[in-house]
Every structure is written in structure tokens, then in C-alpha cells.
Amino acid sequence: MLAISCKDRVEEESYVKKYTWHPLKVTASAYNSTSRQTNGNPNITAFGDSLKPGMKYIAVSRDLIRKGLKHNVPVKIHGLDGIYFVKDKMHARWSNRIDIYMGIDVKAARKWGRRKVNIHYGSIKEPDTLDVSRKKQ
Image (cartoon, helix red, strand yellow):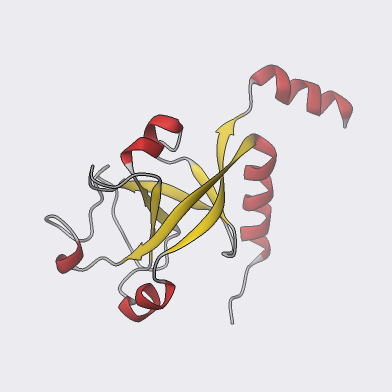
């Protein structure tokens, strides 16, 4: 059973309000921090971030980076709880794909497999948009 704390919900709500969310349909697979699945150090991403089991991170194909899914962008994945963050990038051969980080749980990654999913990625709202929404409250 997955438990979500009140703190997690408050943080997620603040992200929802702070960002404009853009829909996108992608192919999603899963990966682990094992030396067999990575180039070099399995605990360091291509952006230089540290991977730790339990973190909600994703890798994205390079074409998605050009579309706006840049380093640290928040992503909501249909069917999964919480907000994930772009912390890694995939090999250049992939397109329109994300890879969901699943720590060292290889069984969970295999169970996830590869599937089409709907995601929403955030872009920070313009300051004037934030000011208008504050005035309405």
C-alpha cells in the first residue's frame, strides 16, 4: 500500500498552482540504478544528479528536452501518484520516450514493461498570470 503524507500533498498542490500543465502522450519504460543499465556510475544521472531508491525521477528522450521537458521540470504520469522530476536523459536513439526510475527494484521495472502513457509536464506560469490569480482570491 502506498501512503502519501500531508506534506507530500501540500507540496504537490503548490506545484499544481505554480505551473501551467501541458499534455503529451509518450512511451514509458522503467530503469534501475544498476551498472548493467547505465553508462558509468549507476547512481549519477546524465545531468549529474544523484539517484537514490525512492526518488520520483524520470529520464527523457532528447526530443522531449527540446519540447520543454528540461532538467528539473515536474511531470505528472497518468496512473502513478505524485510528481516526478526530469533528472536524466536517454540515449539519442530514443524519441518520444520517458524512462521511470525504479531504484534497484528490477522486478518492478520489468513488471512496468513498456507502455503508452499520458503525461503532463509543467512550465512555470508567467508572473502576470500569477498576479491575476492572486487578485481573484
